[in-house]
Image 1: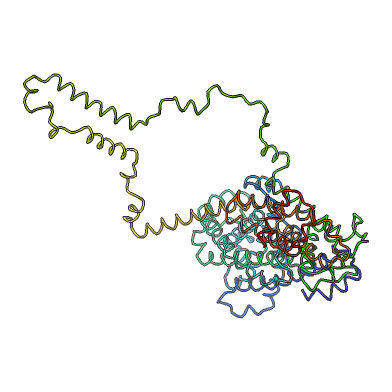
Image 2: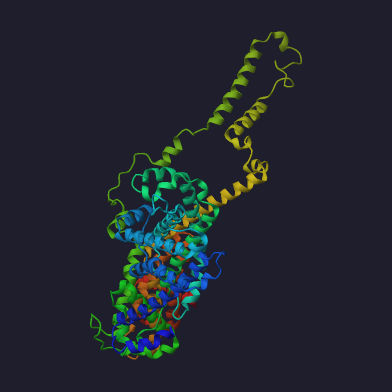
Length: 627
């Protein structure tokens, strides 16, 4: 950041607007990113194309000569495209299908694919030219009849790198890598975030590269003859001998060179993109170099240019001014500037800041309340069918129907009663048909209880059979029992498959939650900065506002913040997921700390303001909690 100071002092003489100062800073950062990416690309290309057979070639001038055009043709186009498409926030898509439909109709999708594929082909050519003296992978392999006959190893390597470029383009478009990952604080070193961010996602890029190479190699070996037979009619002078060669042309060594080329291409492009996005997200204090800092700051807050850059940087600077004690003079200037006419509205500085902040929060609150849906659809879904005043009553209530209805009996009880009644009927028939001689003496029953089963025993036996039929798990062994009888290798494979399925399922659920949050809170980072700035400026006005311009806005500020907090809490409770809690934590923390600061600062003085009943209740809860 200190490197831009001297340049901004010079630029401030000619640049009086916030957009001009910001554009100057971003251009300097893009230039630094280009130089850093050139160095990293050179190191990766030299490391990937190095061969043991020629150890002295690394220090030759031709090596550096090929690295420069490789960077210009292979890394610089994606970097320029990334800079052109950088945006402050992600486009919210409720589902994956809606995102795919939108991307399929967007011209930027096809431009990105064309740029990435061309860059990957250029990197493959540079890799071949750098490693050709030692690896014998040249572009052409001439014959007597065909002097321009291609080398199949080169075709194999070029096709693999082009496929990788297409995969990287799809990843960039789907994951929206052109969105700036805003840093949470002003003055935080971006290179520290770069290291953490790079190594965090480098494993994913490495896995994606290896999977792409493996699928491409298997597909090439399986389909090469069929494809070359089709292309033989058109490209015969270039691929005539491909069908005569054997599979051993694609050796493990050639596959290893393809892996090296793919890794050099992927990490060169990935480093350039990551470095650009993170350097563009570094907050900087710009207005201190302007002739009128307050007017310059208001110009940034009300700006609609630079694809939303200016507002985010301006609110980040305003948040730092509101919280940092060393900027007390800047806060007094904002409160004292009651004749500011630099803004489009022509109002004083605090009025413009308060109005723009509340408009931003109000718009995003409506989006959060409707969960990102259009206002008309959300209202229809929430209200549903209109409730009429006349309600038709039934003749007999549900309670009376349940009181006089015959109780419902299960099939099991009916079967048991039928079996028991059948046994009792059989005993009665036998007793009635027995001769009289058997009814005399000490014998009282025709069938002795010692030799005939009782009704209760039969009932218990039937119950056990029916229970086993209703609960087949008692007859089927458990998964743990089956797994313990499997071989160790099979158990290990099943465990890996199970863990992979669980991981993919949790990833699917987490992505669904992220989509819902991104649709409901599209400007989460900007909202957090605006809330911090508004709350701390309101709290600081108690001692630093000489004219009392903030006091009349305190009721509506508190009402807006409390309503936003209530809606956010309802949204968190609706999703009830740790991923949602992590994503909304910046806004939740800004609301909690900001409201707490206002309540603690004003304390009993809040009783002098008049609030709506609902706002007063929520505010009283905060006061009780703070006390």
